[in-house]
Amino acid sequence: MEMEKLIELQYNEFVVLTLIESNEDLRSILSDEVDIPIHLLISMSLDGLLNGDTKNIIREIFDKLVLTQTMLANKYMYFAKINNINIDVKNIKKPIIPIIEETIEIKEVKKTQKNKNIPKRYGAEKIKKDIEKHGGESTPLQRAMLSLNILKNITTNLNNRGIKDIFTDTNILTDDDCRTIISLVKIAEQKFEAILKKK
Image (cartoon, rainbow, N blue to C red; front, side):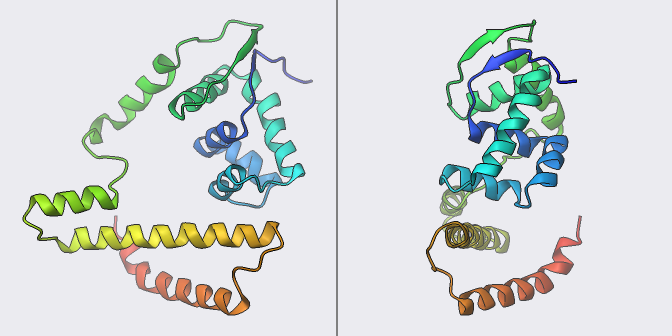
């Protein structure tokens, strides 16, 4: 029996994927149908690279799950709001909690109260400013963080090139390039293994 929709909301593929990324149950449902990591699906959606079948699966999750569950509908509106995306509410069929901040943001504050002073992101610009504040002397940890930022940018760049090659007629990454990437990742895995075991 199909569940009745609680609310009619404007559909936005990026917002749905962001919601799925944050919800373990939705991630599991999507991964059963689509064999691509959620963070790559988000990048592909932004670049307009998702195929029709994948788009239909994401839309089905929105129609059959997001619109039929109060918590998911609220979170969908919340993620739209924090990403500055306007979502039209077309028709409310049943009462739905109207204030997103009360249902989600307060919960998040409680979760992170312990670590409220820890920022979610410590980017290269902030690191460089902190180094300047201390007379230009960087610590080994700050240098490592700068290197991790470089690594993240390289990984994102290569991921985007790979996605473009897979879903278009481009051939940016040659076979030699791919072999080099595989080798470097294996070396990195071996080097990082001991570090990642630390808690």
